[in-house]
Each structure stands twice: as structure tokens, then as C-alpha cells.
Length: 131
Image (cartoon, rainbow, N blue to C red):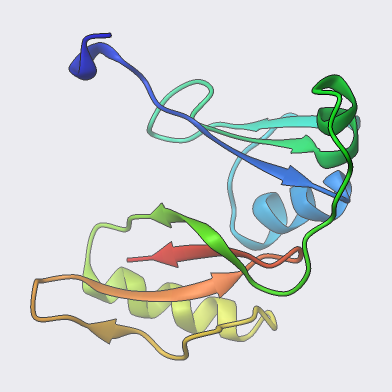
């Protein structure tokens, strides 16, 4: 592979695809033309197949694996959503606060290395860093 020519995507496996799509579409504002089913792709500035959701059960069946739903906050990965300015980060925190979103680490923080961020958990406990 030639690293700079490789496009990277991220997939979240979901126990309830509908609930997850509604969170990412309606709460976070990502666009999808999903109309049901076990797979939903979202359009982002990163391009095609940059982010999608796939049903956990059909995935494990396709891979011939045991279905093991996660519990609590998933600490095995995070997805970063990068906003243009610190003010945008604060505005998004305020907006999401009014929608009852979970903030496992609390309010936005500014770090000495120049990033301001906060974390949210989606309905199935996956972490998103908004910075």
C-alpha cells in the first residue's frame, strides 16, 4: 500500500442500527440516505465510506463468530469529529447538553498541545471525541 493514497474508513457495529442511525443523523447531524436495514453509510468531508454502521449480529454471522454485545462504555476505540474552532467545540457541547447526550469525561478541556475537546458516548457506549 502507498499510505497517502489509502483512504481510511471507520465502522461501528451496532446492536440496534435504527437507534444508532437516529443518534448520528438526528442528534449529531451527519447525513445518510438510510431507509432501514443492517447497513447505513454517512456522508462526511472525508469522502465515501469514511463512516458507516453495520448490524453487529449480521456481521458476526457473516464472519462465523459468536455474537457478544458490548456493555458499558467501549474503551477499545474512539472516533474523532474535528470542528474548525474552539468556539465551535463549545457551541456543540452546549447544543448536545440540551439533548441529553452522555459526557463521560465532562466539559470541554483545552490541552497544552493545542487541542480543545470533549467526549460523548453514543447509545451503545462508543466514544466520540469532539474537538
